[in-house]
Image (cartoon, rainbow, N blue to C red):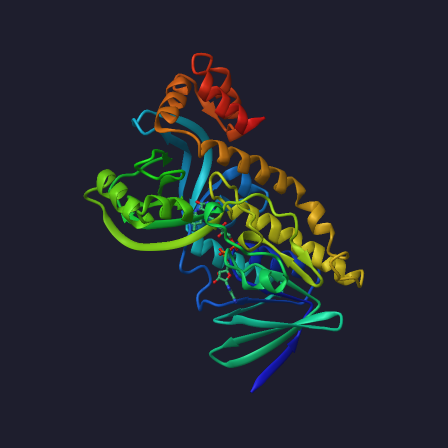
Length: 394
Ligand SMILES: Cc1cc2nc3c(=O)[nH]c(=O)nc-3n(C[C@H](O)[C@H](O)[C@H](O)COP(=O)(O)OP(=O)(O)OC[C@H]3O[C@@H](n4cnc5c(N)ncnc54)[C@H](O)[C@@H]3O)c2cc1C
């Protein structure tokens, strides 16, 4: 039997983007339903779980609001060159217990009046006059949800974005395939670490994000194109990295997922639809980080959707404020895409030189474009590398 319900907004996907969309719209008075295909919110975690403190404080004072959401407070990042020389950038950050954080957001959503339907997968959609119907399935049977607006928050391979007519090409050169292990490494680190080098992760990087009790997320990402070109899988690269760095570590679990790292896409809205988070490819193309953008774009979509419903115009034009309000995020993505393109041309020698000329300086809370400006000023004896760096920031 098909069960039919009506609401103002259906959010497809119960990750960080979907939860923020739901919380924000519900607090403005919308009747919201969030569909999450998995039976448990936040699981499995497919993320290194790193966030900067500054990024989070815009939404939650996590140390106060949800201390158990934090696995580890970190003091900054180490960047390690192929020759193992490194620089450090200090700045407060967290490695989250992202499943617990996601569940904390789900409770916030429910407190705001959202109905979170777990184990419920959106399968199809149909446009109706002035609205949309989402067809979903759960263990209880089939469900049809009629809504004024659908917010697509269903991650990097978003089906809902395709329904909106928004391309999800996942180009091999602009899609990272990431593999990660949660590992008992038996040491407690205060800094996250990023490792570069053609033998480690060609045109990508490996990471170590420390968690509590000597655990760490250790992962590696390379583009699908690079994996094919080198005829070596991301798993083979990760195994080599882990065996070399943590030969005595114990693997607790392993995950794979993809990250869109392409240029900023200009269109995220269609009639009655807004696409947010990874579904809208709101990811920093250099770092692959998308948690903050997921929360920001989700929150903006929740507000825009509710405004449009109140204005009785949920057409693409009525939802157009979303495209305006994400322009700053778009600029950040565009700037970092350019940097990614330039960094892809770095040889191992380039990374070694860059780290060695920056080594004497102390950096705090510096953003990548500013770091590259500083680097370019120190490369008088390395004009070819200076040109590559200038290309990234000009
Ligand atoms: C290996 C790896 C490491 C990463 N590390 C970091 C990091 O350290 N820091 C950082 O900021 N970012 C990181 N990211 C990126 C970050 O995880 C994402 O940007 C972020 O999770 C995006 O959130 P989201 O809510 O848009 O999508 P998701 O987290 O993918 O959530 C989408 C949700 O939608 C659900 N869903 C999908 N289809 C349907 C459907 N049809 N019906 C119902 N539900 C559906 C999914 O089950 C999922 O719960 C990493 C990514 C990877 C792959």
